[in-house]
Amino acid sequence: MKKLILAAAFAALAAGTALAETIKVGVTPGEHAQIMEQVKEIAKTKGLDIEILEFSDYVVPNQALADGDLNANSFQHQPYLDNQIADRKFDLVSVGTTITTPMGVYSSKVKSLDELEDGATIAIPNDPTNGGRALLVLASKGLIKVDETKGLTVTPADVTENPKNIEFTELDAAQLPRSLADVDAAVINTNYALEADLHPKEDAIAIEGEKSPYANVIAVRAEDKDKPWVKTLVESYHDDKIRTFINEEFKGALIPSW
Image 1 (cartoon, helix red, strand yellow):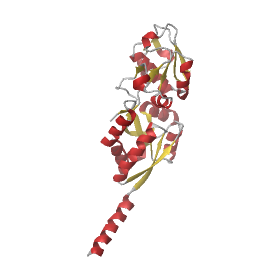
Image 2 (tube, one colour):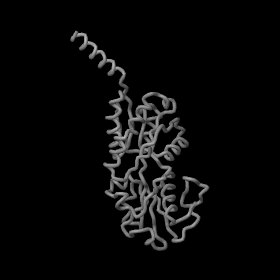
Image 3 (cartoon, helix red, strand yellow):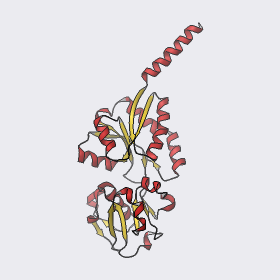
Image 4 (cartoon, helix red, strand yellow):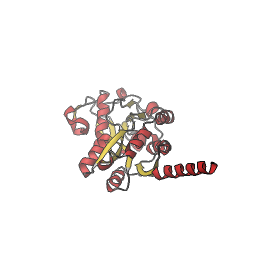
């Protein structure tokens, strides 16, 4: 009888192993990689193995996904994905939101936007999606007004009111923390701020509101969006344990967006 029970147990174990599926998920270093490591442990209990691959470039993870080298990626907000799809004709879709990383305004010269003098220089990202986002942050704080018909794609040319005659310097997003010595303020993405030991809640003189359209997403190829592993991946990410991890580990610098 014991032999039969053992045989049945081994058979069940073998069946469970056979049913387990392995997927490759692309992330960027830092918070996205840290969170995905936690998601990996939860997904494993659901029969899904995740191999995490890190990319330092923002373009390569989408290209790798489109080429079939990845099954999913988790590193970008929806407007950036939309821009990539339009520019590079990727057949990719988002299947779930992950986190919002509020963009902040930082300065080594002033302690509030009100202290900025006439003709002050503010550095913003030079890519279309994050540059527009930076301008919208400044507009939401009343520093400038922009042409609202441009939506999320506003540029410095779309600033309609600029009472302090702010001058905008467009730089690569990764270089913005280093620019603080040379400008009056800079609008910086949270991942680059954290790398420079700048915390949005503690160091920013202004911060993006929580109702932001820039929630980060999990992306997959359109042909895969209805596959069972996609549902498992999203459910694993949206587990309460992940929410707790984000809140405790990042202390408000990142906000769960589901």
